[in-house]
Length: 126
Image (cartoon, rainbow, N blue to C red):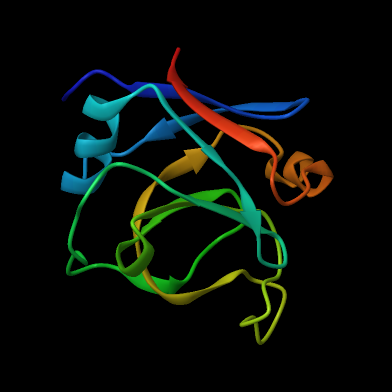
């Protein structure tokens, strides 16, 4: 089993650790770290374009769990899901279209509710 790939996501004053899975997209992102961008909010989701190109994986989905991390191929975007989005039909986050699941926030993902659009977001290896 490969070693656990832990990252730190920092958005303004908010910071959380996450673990990346072993998917092809997560591997590309791991190899590109550190990454920095300006976050956009869409309901309780933060997303931003990253310099990683990946295609939609076969297990990509639009219905995600609170705390899951995704990669949105149409926007080459890293996504942090922490609650309802405008596309949600219940309490679960729903992406605009299928995302590749990258991993999960460790602990309380709702801390990202304090982040406003335009905040600088950094992804680093821990």
